[in-house]
Image (tube, rainbow, N blue to C red; front, side, top):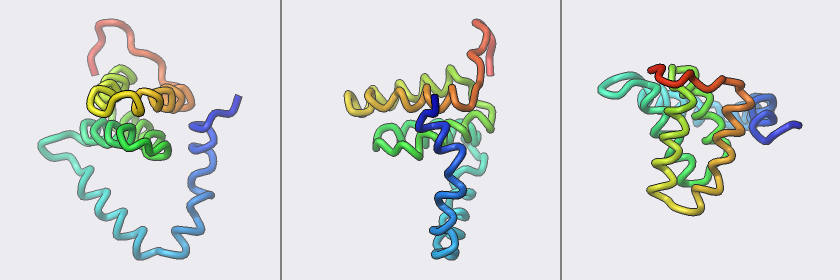
Length: 122
């Protein structure tokens, strides 16, 4: 079964190529902003990715959800931390965000991380 998350991970670079080619300066500027915002400081990059994921959920941005789940995992967040951050988004935004929680588990499953053993820490 091909999910939206799998499709995103397989096709995003190809699908966004025309935009990157048409607006290279805009994309470069956004990339610089992204790098500066996600650089570790008082918060780790993983923590910042969890915040970005929660915001993506709250504003119902499907591609943001997929992107920030992937980046959070890359920077060391666990499945449990990702789901907990998603729960905070639901608490803040309510029902509409709840309907997007399936996108988080879909993204986690597409990237295939296994749930951590009980009692393990990140």
